[in-house]
Length: 155
Image (cartoon, rainbow, N blue to C red; front, top):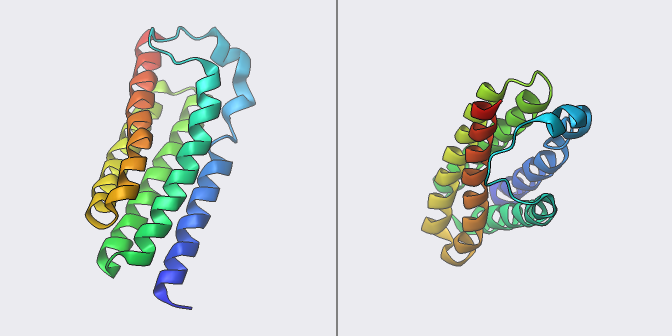
């Protein structure tokens, strides 16, 4: 197995783990979530169902493309940033829905957005076209961070 093949497998495994683990705690406190004061710019619920599949697909696609073409150092850094971003995003889900610690949850999501900004830069450096498809994911994380911060401030 080449390092590129291994890198592709790692990227796909991390994105699948992200897709599965990000929703583990979401429905555990639905009545609590419904009772929260919402920020005025809260998107409609149906948008979440559309954007997340797109995000996971484009993240995996970008990762595969970078792993297949980038220099080893860029590919390694991309994977490290992906793991850091995914870990932060999953931490947000846990802290928001389980102990309801909206402050730590907000910081976790801000960290995920910052790590993803690094992913975006590296993708632009190695795969210009696919990088443009990552922009909505980056924008979504910024909006989600602002929402999380809004929940923290309002509740």
